[in-house]
Image 1 (cartoon, rainbow, N blue to C red):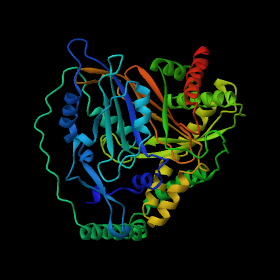
Image 2 (cartoon, rainbow, N blue to C red):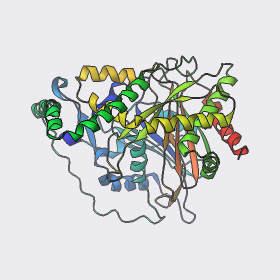
Image 3 (tube, one colour):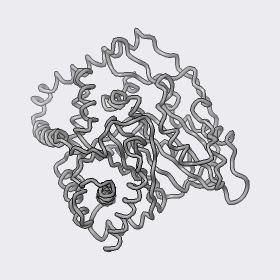
Image 4 (tube, rainbow, N blue to C red):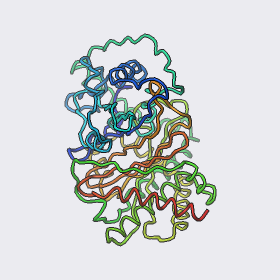
Length: 454
């Protein structure tokens, strides 16, 4: 059961969720119909999805509470799993309206925490799929990988083989309680044995000192107060809007090479430029904002592992700087310094250490970390596959990421890449930031500014 228990990081996304802060990650994808033959029907698409579920067992599991809150929730098989409650047909004729409607609705806690909405009759002949899964279940990179489970590298769909699934019987409350208590005792025992391990292996102490420095830097960075923003950190609503902009991936790579930066540096720099132009357009004075940047810690030996395998870096966005090259150099220097100081590893150690704390303290810190006083907005770079992908012969043409926003946060910016294209998803609260399309346009203009200088 321990392998199915939420980590403290997974559980934190449940803790900070509210009716106005939906903690699902997701994507909005568009597929072109096959060049020959008819497009698959909704029924065929749902059967195709069902045939692949054995590759992602978590999609048939739901969360179970541990009595008296003795430990974090655990994943158990949903004995009443019904695919028709998770793969749904959309009748919306407007693609953008469908995406906003789906993302504005919170996932139901009593069943597996995911949904796929399929629009098989869009006016332009394409097929749209909107997917969402709770952040306690997957992080952004895993969401891309799970979406890829439905896709193939060729237009021909291979035979998935026999599909046999029988739900395991749900554990009773007594078993959940006992295993939860035992898990807590094991955690306490591991902590108590640390001094003994260092006496037996003194060299480990040097590694501990280095990790302590990393942890201290990460903690200090997270404690730095974010700027007060009347635009990006106002009370929000349940309504969501996904604005978008796409560019050739070659544009970002060209800027990367010209200025000796990384793709992530370029993403942060153009986001800073887009935010700056948006603030100026709103009559606001641009200031340096604080962004939370997730960093994948997913090992190459476990690429498909579920749950959250992420850490984070807090980065100052030079929105007050009018020169695009100086913005990029500022971001590049900051990110290089953060990585050299081991801040992603320090933040990861902090999250692991938090897992040994009392649950009340864990939940308090989770809410503090999601506060507008800790950061202004989230910016996430989620790389996707470089090869063409197909779903029942329909080629994936566009896919825009959805990065969740916490209470009192108005916007997040995500980037994902597919084949030779880069897709920005600007995910916003419809009430507190109704003009997110202008922000997306500003990001595109910021890319043009840097391209003109190459």
